[in-house]
Length: 124
Length: 106
Image 1 (spheres, chains in turn brown, orange):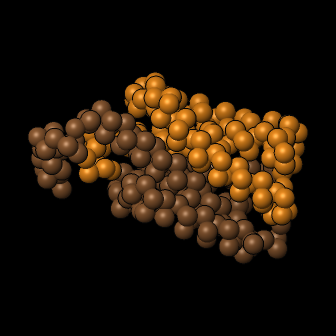
Image 2 (cartoon, rainbow over the protein chains, first blue to last red; image 1 turned 120 degrees about the vertical axis):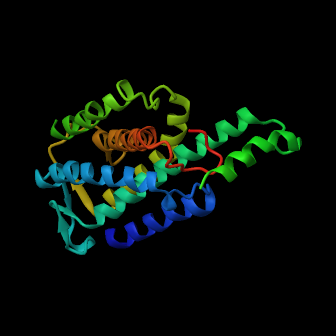
């Protein structure tokens, strides 16, 4: 499998993790895309140093050949997959910790669920 | 050494987010560890496969390896995800109205 094909799998896997497995749905959130944009700027810088100074080299046969700030364009997809997977796990663990704090009882005691519902309906 | 210095710079540059902005990422070590673990396994695995397949190679590193994977790469997959988490929490701290979870408090 070429690096080009591998990053396609990597991005698809990250989307599946975010939307279907953990259901964190970060890709529909402004906070995620803002954080990703900041990460992307720094990625171009860091990746530019690592590839521009020849610390990391890529076999020409494995990449499409388009480069951005010295690095193959596939690295952008690699970085996106890395950031999305990381943040999906982070948000998911946060949600679990919160649920553990607010329950036991959320599922069995309807009164405990009321504040959650109120909060949800009050947010756009 | 340059690779290690770049990673060190990433840690140093993002440190004010924890120390000044107070995003409380390093202060939630279990959650951070549980976040890093699956990502580390997936991406070090990917890295090892790519190195083995000759897709990319490394030069002028410390020379310390675990299997095929250089020490710098192992650290990369701890440092960069941590920076990403710090960035997200900084955005959330700066823009509290940008919720990322329907029933989230923060």
